[in-house]
Image 1 (cartoon, helix red, strand yellow):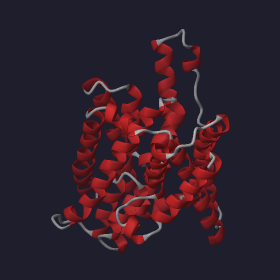
Image 2 (cartoon, helix red, strand yellow):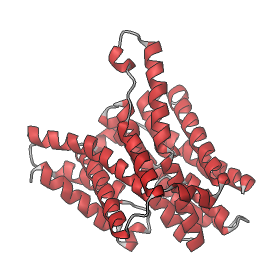
Image 3 (tube, one colour):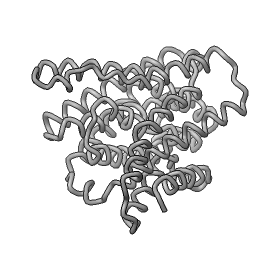
Length: 330
């Protein structure tokens, strides 16, 4: 089948699987499922792709990704920030700055990873997993194998973190709301925050989701600031590369902020919000499916253990550092 038929089918299948309770209990959202299904298809498909197939895959990884992130803003509101208090916002901010700074520095200086792998892995761990990696890709313009390696490591340790929270809860003296803040400020994916919170109780899950969504909302200013910083670094390091020195303005991030603002100001009908949520999920799943279809396991294997070690380090900092930070401020 041509790509313009296969990729939508993979995206819809990933969304359907993610809605099954037995699957969602593992914290597997439509995004990682879509990339896994895409990889499976890419490995076993006998079809020789033509120019139209490549064009459609590129369209999904670029345009559909941006559309999905813009529409995702309709699931956020500034009222959610007010509801959980300033402590949750402050904790989210500290977590993002710390994880991204440490991940980038250690990845490049200590593990000697390619700059793009370090930045993508750090961004995915700091903010919202695979979606943050793909959003950061718009600024970095990295190789596809760098994106694949970052997503693989972040999904792995995000899943491990999700299963760690119920165990930690049994051994700590933290109330349900505070523990929800802890989950939301340290979980990699929104689905993982939901699954981990559900394993405790309803109050913990609701707090975890709101705090996690605040982290997602911080993706917008993060991408803009990263674009400005990288532009200045590129200009200072090599003045001859004018193309790399230009400011890359991620306009879709501004669209994301606008949709979140609209959702904060206007009360949208539930049916419309459901439709927009599905459209966002479908668009992002299409981007993931396209990425997975052109990914090979040998690419991940060839990257070696260093990306895994970096993701492991960030996982430890999130779990331990996030706990003590939450206990101190709540």
